[in-house]
Every structure is written in structure tokens, then in C-alpha cells.
Image 1: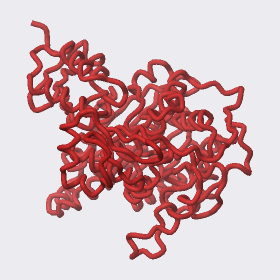
Image 2: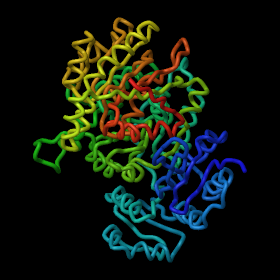
Image 3: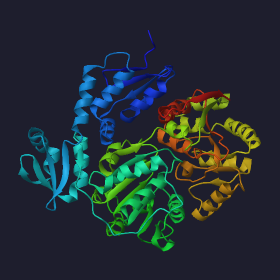
Image 4: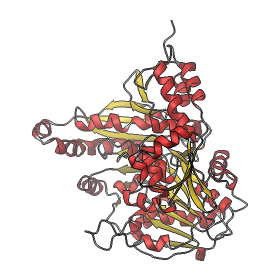
Length: 550
């Protein structure tokens, strides 16, 4: 009997045999409609959720496609209830539609009985203004976003075909000497959908270093309209400005920054999430002073960079901007606050993604070797750890002083190989002490943006080869020559953070060398437990962690 590759269980979980020769092929086949839950040595556990099925449906997969893939790799019969659940929930996507008719926003369905049942739900009744038939009702355009969230929450995601405002015209083209990669072109075209109402909102999921910014610019060139780009930091905003000036025909005066440093509006405006959610008073949880500034403009496109980091207040802003095309860019749809439903409803469903290892095999991102180094605690630290409150244990383990010696050993090894090295961590005191010991520049959130940019430029030029960063280094830093990342501490069990940090070193290297990712954890501690959860997303993408004992 051959070793089973996949076992589908009646609780909607899928077990994938890592030891099977078909492991990689099966993993890529089920990835579009599953989410990894845990990854012990031999069998990885995936879950089929309603949201994962709806995201799969939005990319064009059908229930028949999903069941066919499961049957192909399963050694046993698929439980009948699983087939029924897949068919039921994927069939729901598109059963309800939002359309625009005679300037009215209409909620409609082809299923009269289903429509009547949904409209009787108390969660929905307040959104309906009047019925125009047994299968259609008028709703207010002002509740377009909120209605989409509610319908998704009750299990009936609506397909939004109501179209978008045009926005003011902007003559933007990619420069002639710049050629899109095939997958970048495909991603932009899937989002654009020939300008039809079936395109215009959704999320592109691709690894760091694969050129998501380029896809955003390609979408801008297709739509040719005034664009608002939202980013997680000023550093990211200025990277967008540099890229737009280098790769498009836009002039400097057409691109404006709206941040804590500069507040200007132009045909293309790049703003930070932080400035968008700024309040007049810290105690005022309802009024965001900059919302009216952006709502007053006639945008034709909004781009959400690192959409998985979208702060909760921006969902409110997005709910009010449903008539504007919305493009989310991210390496992972995972959110630590579990608001994936809000991203799906308000920004749009997943439109395009490619497994990381496929892009690696094509040479578009660097190969990567991941290592978890488990470092013992000395006896005094073990005692402090044992008697500490639960919430303090992770800090004690994360700040294990023995990590400094391991960092020095790794630096000695990679200095010989002339690598560019990033050291990243969670705890500022720990980072500050290590930076002083190594004589290495340290970038934190407190550092002025001008100073940060100077140090980043020195790292890019090779003037400095070792750079330490706090959590500000988790995302949106363009450091193409960084090939080694040493993670000395992290944020609890954040899968999102682990993916972002590996992404810092995934740009392909000129000499073809692989990226090296080292995660330092204290042995037999909560930090080691959290590390297993942190690694889940990368394991799902096909990366294995070699465990080394320090």
C-alpha cells in the first residue's frame, strides 16, 4: 500500500503527508482553498473555511475543481459532508449581487426563496429602502460597504457589480524601457478585468521582493486616474515616490506626500495609515481629522500597501469609499486581529496569488534557507522564568543574553562570505545593548525619517554591511542586497511577522546566493512554542526550518 498523501476529515480538516513524494505538488494544489493550522513533523494540518472557499471562488475555482483536487491526492473517500459543504458555500458566492440600475443601488438574486429568507433577517432589514420585485431591493449607496460585511458575516457574501466612479483623468504610463514580468502583467490585468464591473476591487497576494509595487503602478497605468496610495510608514511612502519617478512618466510635481512631515494633495497622493487615522483629540474615538481631506478628492483608485496591516479605523474609511476602485497588496492575508472578513468585504476578495516556491524556481525571488537556533537559558534565568507571570515569560525568553554570543558567531561566519546582514528584534533595550556591543547602527521608530533614510542608503550602497532594526523593519523596506536576516526576538506567535521578515531578504541576488534566515529562540520556553506558530505560513509556502541547538 502506498503512503497516503492527503487525508480529508469530516471536520473540514485536511492532513498532508510531508514524507510523500507528492507532498509539494499536493500542497500547491490545495493551497488556494485551505489555511494551514499546524505543522508537526510528518502530517501538516490544513483547514477548509468558508472564507477560504469564497476567496477560491472569487479567483474562478469551482466546487467541482476543489473536490477534484482533493480526490486526486486523497487515499480515502472524501466524506460526504465535506463535499456538500464545499458545494454549498462556494455556490453561495455570487448568489447575491449588488448592481447599479437607473442610478439606484440594487441588491438582487436569481433565487426568489433565498432572497426572501435573507431579507427577513433582522441584520439585513435596516439596510433595505424598498422592494422593486421579489428578487430585488433598493439599498442606500451609503451602506454599500456595511451591507457587504453583514452579508459575509451571515454566510452569504455579495458579489459587488455596482461599478465605480471614474475619478479625474491622469495620463500615466510605464516607461518604455521597463518590462513587466508575466505574473505582474497577469495580476494587473486580473484586477483591471478590462475595466468591467467584475474588476476594480480585490487583493493581490505575492511574496516580498516579487514586485507588488510594480503591479500597483501597472494598475494605475491601465486605469489612468487620480490615485490615493496608503502605506504603513513614511519610509514606504517615499519608496513609492522613488519607484513612480523611476518607472513611470509622472513628474515630481504630480506626486505628493501626505504624512506627519508633509501634507500635500496631488494627482497621485501617498499617505500613511497613521496620518489617515489621526484624531483631533486622543480621547475622540469617532472623529478622524484627515478623513474629510481625502474623501473630498475625486479618486479613481485607492491602493492599500501591506493591506494585512490595515488599522481598524481605515475599514470605516474604506466602507465609505466603496464607489472607488480598491487594490490591496500583501504577502499574506493573515491578520493577527482576525479581520480577514473585513478585508474580503471592503477591499475585495483575493484576485491573484502564486506560491512563493514557484517564483523562487523561476528566479524571481531568492531561494531561502530557514534555521531555528534553540539557545539554552542559564540556571538563574531558568529560575526567573519559572516563577514569572505568564505574560512576562515571553519577554524573559526573548531577551536571553546568550543570544548575543550566537549573533556574534553568525556575524563572523557571514562576514567572511561578504554578506549584507540585517538583525531585527522586538525589544528596544535588547537591541540597544547589542548595537552598542557590536558598534552597529540601530533604526527604531523614534529615529527621524531623514536619519533612517540616510542609514538605509548607506546599507544599500555597501558603506555599512550590518544593520539593526526594530519592528519598523518588518515591512516596506527596499534593501535588495540584504542576504542574511537574524531574528533575535519577535512578536509572540505572529505568522504575519515571520513572513514579512523573511521577505526582507528574498530579493534575488546578483551572484545567485540564497537568502539565510535565522530565528533565535530560547530552548524549552514559551518563545519556542510561539516559534512553531510563527513558522506556519512559511511552512505552507514550502519552507522548512532546520533546527540547530546553540
